[in-house]
Structure formats: structure tokens, C-alpha cells
Length: 431
Image 1 (cartoon, one colour):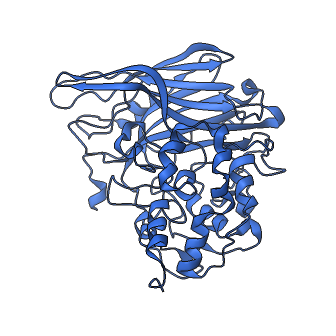
Image 2 (cartoon, rainbow, N blue to C red):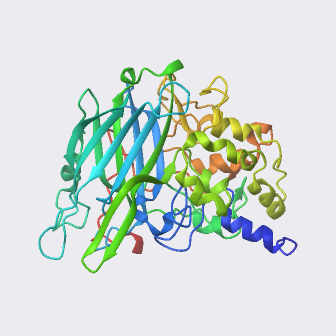
């Protein structure tokens, strides 16, 4: 089947990261929803955003929860220098409340690092949360991350340690920052093997969750919906990470200076992987979401639709993909449409009630609380993306999937909802 595919197409496939934007080179070196998605950010894990979530809080439906994860492929046993947030970066959650794709409210997290006893170090990092709105910056929370889950002697009673990481926000709501289990799930090992997918009852994917046993670092807020005063009840959300423009390294360490510049951004899952060509991925990460118009051709004519047709004869539409433009750049009419301005945002209609029995396929399955209307932790974005690229919204309804339908860890019932990270002592990946 594959012998007639040109080398150029195969290179394009691997570079663009397959139909769901997921590739892997091995533990800690894979890309998925947005893990290691571009050349430069792959060299800067502590600034590498992996996933963004925005949803009405299931236990507090009058609030909205926004969570972002960084540092892909955290091995829980990765000592003695365990994973931490970077003390020289700014981590941002930005909200557009009026549909112009510009920032109205930003929650900015900044961290410090302490030194602990013996060889263990101290992964409990003091941090501040600053709210930026109307040209004014206000510190609205101070906290300390729970330590990483090192093991029963270093971090006993981990659930109680982690619970202390939730802190109140001035003006209402709460914040959290710290290590979590990676809630993203998918068989990216099989997908990277020439887009191995499952169609119906066929079995081209292995159905193995590559991310089981690995962690991430999460930062997030839960804020009252009323405080956002969103136009038509719809918000657009994106996350970003900034660093100083100049970093100098010497034998005494590193120092940073100059203006802050954006080095990574993320809204909808899979966009940089699925849509943006490799040569433009670093540029894309540095641009604001309202500059997405320059990339429209890659949404209108996605290379991945052409590739999967060549590989698996699936008859996915390859041109005039106004459905993908709507889902990712303007919002979907009568769901979360914010206007004709092209901007890559995770749009959420806050007027839609919380689904009592969520469907992992979200809007495609008639559950309008799921992606692409915001994104919940249990939304199966790989299967949704496969079916969407395959032409679901164009009438080509292909039963595609990767065989992994949920995370290996049960979500928590309250903020921040993501499960505690697994213990380094337990070595769960070896089981």
C-alpha cells in the first residue's frame, strides 16, 4: 500500500505529525496534543505547553475552569533534579471576553525555586498569580506548589500534600499549580507508525496509552462566570509562555534580561501538529492568535487529509475545508461563534449547561459541552480530530479512532480535577 507514496509525502506526514498530530520517538520524547510540537520548543521542556482545557466546572457550574500543562513526558522517578516550573518564565492563561480575539483578562503565573536538603532538592515552588485586565496588574494569589510525588518516604500522604496546593483568588475563585498526572491519552506510538488508526472494528492502532505513568506540571484557575461578563456568553481562551529575550550562560549559571517574548502558545489541541507545516511551527508559536489569517491555506487544504487518503483510501475531503476554519478559527455558528475574525482560540459557550453524562466524542456525539466547545479533561480529542479531519462535518462520517478512549487514571471530583501524579517509587511504567 505504501510503496507508491512519494518520499515527499512521507516526510510531510512525519513532520506534520500524522492525522491527529501525534508522534513519538520514545518515552519523554513524544509529541501529542502539543507535546514537543516544534523544533525550538522541543529544546525547552519547561516552557513547552502540552494541553489546554476550558470547561464549566462540573461541581461548581457557576464557575469556569481553565487549566494548562507544561513539560511533556515527566518520569515520576526523574531525580535528583526533578521537574519544576522555570523561575525565568511567565506562564499565561488569557481570556477574550468580547469576541475581538484580544486579551481582556490574563492570569499570569511566576515561580521561584528553593533548594532543599540532601540530594532531593525542593520541588515545592513559591509562586504568584497576577491578574492583568484593563491595563492594570494585580497580584490575586500567592501559593506554593505541592512537592512532586517522589515516594512514600519523601512525600507521604501525597493527597493531603496536593490538596494544600489549591489557593483562593482575590475577587473569587481559586488557583492551583504543581505536578499532576498527564490527563492526555492516546496511542501515539502506533500513530507515528504511518498513521496507524482504527477504522470500525479494524485494528491498525495498538490501543495503548503512551502517556500512562507519565506526569506534567499544571497551572490553572477556577473563576466565577459572572466575573468575566462575556459577550453572548462566549469566551476565547489561549495559553502562552514568555521568556526574556536574551539569556547568557556562564560557569556561574545563567541570567536573562531584555523584553519578554512569547516562546510557546496553545489553544485548540493538535493545531500546530496537524495544520502548521514544520518550517512554520516555531514562527507560529511566537505569534498572537489573532494573526492566524496568514495560515488559513493550511486549514482550507490540510495536508493530512491528503496523506491519509493516500495511505488508507479514506476519501477525506482535501480542499475547501470551511468546516475546519469554523471549528478552529471563528467558532461554530449556533455553538460558539465569535465573529468572522480568524483567530486560533479555544472557544467556550458558557451558557450551555454542564452535561450530566459526558460523551468522550463531544459535539460529534451531540454533547455540546465537549470539544470543540471548550475542552474537558475526558474529551477524546484524538478520535474527534481523526473523524473531523476525515470529514465528519462535511458528511463523511468515518468511524476512526486510536483505540484509547480514556485516561488510565480517574479524575478527581473537584478542582483541579486532574489526578495526582504517580509515585516515582512505584515505577508504574514497568508493570
